[in-house]
Image (cartoon, rainbow, N blue to C red; front, top):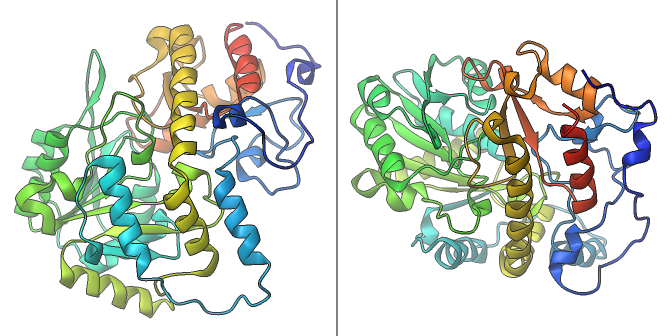
Amino acid sequence: MTTPSDDRRADLPPLDPREGPVEGPLDRLFERAFDRSGTGSGKWARTGGDAAGAIAMGLADMDLPGPPAVAAALRRRAEHPAYGYTVCDPAGRSLVAHWYRERHGAEIDPAWVLLLPFGPRTAVRLLLEAVRPAGPVLFPTPEWGGFAQLCRAAGLPYRELPLARDETGYRLPLDAFAAGRAGAVLLSSPHNPSGRVWTAAEVRALAGAAARAGGVLVSDEVHGDLTHPGRRHPVAVAVAGPYRDRTVTLNSVGKTFNTSGIPSCFALVPDAALRERITEVMAGYGLWEGGLLEQVAQGAALRQGGPWLDALLRHLSAARDRLTGLLGTAVRSAPEASYLLWLDAAALGLPPVGARAALLERCGLEASAGADFGPGGEGSLRLNYALPTPVLDVVLRRLERL
């Protein structure tokens, strides 16, 4: 075993203390390290505080600066001294529909759009209450651990169906879903934790399985805008075909534009009756569409964030190639979207039990434990590689020591 030097901080790049925009091409935004201390970052808190130069790679939160247009819009709004109740801007629905048309080639009726002042996790929980599933909730495993947590909180039975895997990575176990009695089917699309982009045929088949069982497919697509160049994200409500009215898509500017600290999301709900039930459930919790800072951040991101997102995707795909080239067969499923790398701990020379603690001790890299992603996640680690280039350079050097 290789033990890192006690002065592990020495291999980290100096943090750039400058404030203000970076001049030149947008790609340059991602070429310098910057300091998140004093910002209450949950991602960096997971390293244990002053952890001798540990690098936070666990929480799905980018260590990259967000779009300048979002920061400018928030500054402008903050200059107005009134921060009271804010009505929902109906133009926001058309803006979401335009984003899907231009970004994904998907035709979305603005009437389907609900503009929600909370994050996708809350949206899934409220959707489950609105759907009132008569049977168990089904979802694959390994899968984002929030699904199981939300089902337990709602008092709903659930079943986790093991993902299939071939030489290219994970595939959805469609036969298992078709055979199951489902009150609802939950899916992260693209897949969290592996970054796999499900095909349109797979998503349509899940929508059909849910509909035939009298349930609803809820497709959590918060990583969908982060599909890497050369891949195409299937928007569930656009590819569900005859099952569209039994399908819901959730998305947010949070993951795409690194604004998760301002919780918001939007739901695409083709069925008018379900939209009405969701609105009633929200009202019961004192919630309504819109939100003050949520609408400011979302509007600026969707109107002006496209060029920034293109630059980000170039950066992420290059980082992915560097890491997968180094780690080879330790990568369980080749990432095709987002900034997540799903790794086999044993192939890295780490103990299957306690791999997260071992990686932090040996390399000073903080990851997410595979067990957090359900019974299919044991013996795995999830790394977040949305890092500035100089920090990624350090990560690669540390991984080479394993």
